[in-house]
Image (cartoon, rainbow, N blue to C red; front, top):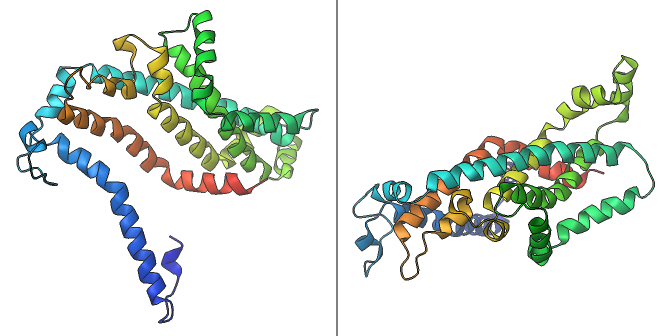
Length: 284
């Protein structure tokens, strides 16, 4: 933490107190919804709708988790999301690394135009093109198929990943590649053996961005899929909303389960994510 190394004097103690109070308030506001979600998932229905709500469940139960798995296809939704997010992450990292390296190392006509065009794609709200994209997927026979999600997610993931990784490649001296080529490496060998290992923070940052984006996406999955067995987790959570009632306890239990993979993935690469986001945004 940057603030940990700052020595506060008597003059700036009020400012320090204000900063810490603001940080605590922001932390509580950010964490409270997750705490309430976990608390509700462990409550009995009658405790959930009690006239005086309680933060801590008066009676703990795991029945909501059991029913969420036994009465719905939650495990199937989870596997579908793992498959889609993993493929999008793998494809996004590979293509963005190759594309970013090409933009960083090679000069060709229209290079700046294509870089700007890629950035403009990232600026475009996905919902704006959902109808044209739906027509394209229908004509290609990809509706009600995970391929439609893989194509659309990868399309919107690549632009930022390319720009992020390009900043890393721009910061690596060309002399390293030249030295590798003098030792007998080809351009491809120099890229995979020398350059790519140096960009692992950027690769990790791009990977977490692609994974979380594909894991949380709802609109495309809701539009392109109409078979219950193909639903991803965000769409699967929508099945807990009935016509007249909502199974809030089961919904919260499923939401807790839905949050765990992203949390674990983020905790594993959080150091690389911070390094990658900062370095990729200031280099080049």
